[in-house]
Amino acid sequence: EYPYDEAEKERRQAEIEAAFQEYSGGLKNGMSDYDKVRYAYEYVIKNTVYQEDLEDDQNIYSVFGKKGSVCAGYSKAIQYLLKRTGIECSYVAGEAIGQGAHAWNIVRVDGEYYYLDATWGEFNIEDNSEPEKSIFYDYFCVTTAELLKSHQPDQTLIEYPEFTAT
Image 1 (cartoon, rainbow, N blue to C red):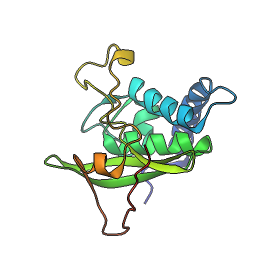
Image 2: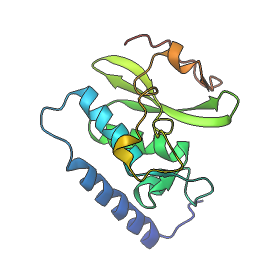
Image 3: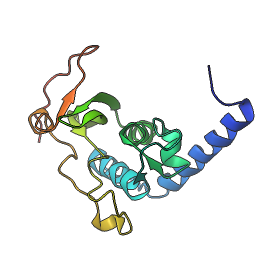
Image 4: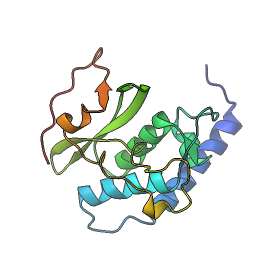
């Protein structure tokens, strides 16, 4: 059952669309796949504060409408932005080893697949007042071997192939 009436759904969709239009203003003609993926990664990190227990924190509205979310919101927002700009991107659920449930993405860049974790790209979740200095790239377009040091995908529904491109 959908938790909102039609008017609320339309209001939220309009906020999401306005956020996408703002995001689109930073896209330049001729950007490579890599540049588009990096731009989406940086945009979500710069415009979102990690906040637990925020209403809607499991969906993209928390990122675009409330500017605060958890891993599910970050990952779904990345997926939304990239798909709308023609980049193949999937949502992955699993766990951060020793920390519990977690979500991140798989992206396709120049024909190769990589893992990407925008939540862990936010270097300091306590203080995001200088976002351009707060981005951490250790979880940006990584191989399976790198990812498995800290993440474990849930493979009960799908077995993920090994991604080895660098």
